[in-house]
Image (tube, rainbow, N blue to C red):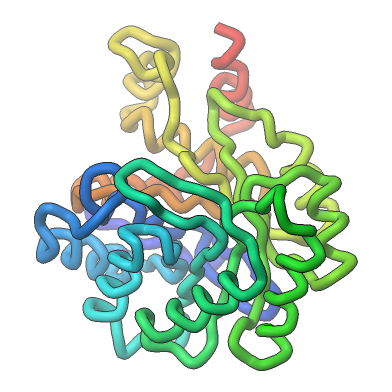
Length: 287
């Protein structure tokens, strides 16, 4: 596949920041169970560098990835950062071991993790800090409240939320402006359709995580596989193109450990689906 970079017109705003509409998620650049370093740190660094070379200007990470493995990899590989590179991170989940995640939203813990994120990323301020999970044991206003305090202190530029309902977004907005929402959303899981519609109506950027999940649709001879063959594209490219065509406020962040897959994903940002193509892909879950 020929090299393709994203075009300037395919952008989305996060408050006063603007980024091309294809980011890069770093979760896969960790060890088994999202714990510890990747098997090949040099290869992981090359993927990060290639993403930026191809026009990616939104890198998604979290304190809990590793923990702090991807933050340190980003700092070592991409620092000094380009002026237009947005580093988005998350706090609010503690780790007890491989594949173990626990929501932890005590204000003192969130503040500590923000300070550590700044240190490991080598930043004075975080472009976007997202509450990774809402801790049901802590009042939401306390969790968002400490992030608001950190925003007023200049340590956070914009605040986002992850895995939330419309009601939770509305409650959070009573405490601080919310710039982004990151919920799972893909061809086979559209349970957050209402949240996406809300985001579109309220100028909130929607970041779909697990954007390449396609289930049996991509199995040999499956519906998406057949469409991909017809259009001469990889199934994952059609899944990403569908997301990008779904709404102008969608910012996918597909992750990978492969430069080849990365280049495929970036190329999907240039795909413009005809109405009948979008409809065909949109209807696949009913197949």
